[in-house]
Length: 111
Image (tube, one colour):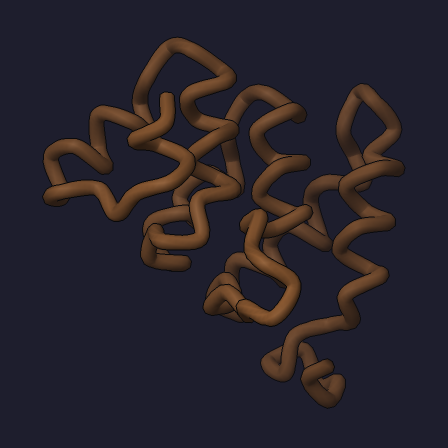
């Protein structure tokens, strides 16, 4: 799981395997991986487990001064528009996303 959380994955085959992995924690670690391409992490935006989507919404864990590359605007818009309908009420994820501000593609200035 350290590979999914703290390292750049070696190639697309490994990324595909992680995204399709049956273990929720493995996918959740990848959702928070600061070294992963945001477009690859965005593939988890429709993950069946709210836990994985919440980690994706929260963003990568990084040092205080480091700024991870953001998810593509389309992924953030998709997450905002679909996560409020979750069985868990969507509250934690929705709050995380709304707290970050809407992406520039949605017409709001970036934060």
